[in-house]
Amino acid sequence: MAGIGDIVGPVTLDHEGQREKFERDGVTYVHRHDERTTGETWWRAETNGIKQGEAKITYVDPVSAFDSLRPLLPDTGFTSIPEWMRVAAERESAADDSFRDGHIYLVMER
Image (cartoon, rainbow, N blue to C red):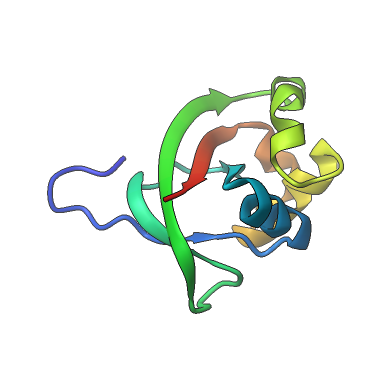
């Protein structure tokens, strides 16, 4: 989590459905295996991509089971939890099964 002097890195929304949902509604959730910085930042459409807009990242909860993600799914832009976890794993270069544990972050347009 961001502290005094910490830089909040940008959030990458590289999945088309997630990005479209965020652009339409100004909100989405992201899953990360490791914790990340939170606070005001910006978002991009691809890793190392250019700034697309302003965002605020808020820590929501740790997650340890796919079923706990089910209530969030409609706000992610993904069609299924396995799809969401596959994209998250690709983003972090990790195995799909390692994503049963992780952290959920709310990303809001600002």
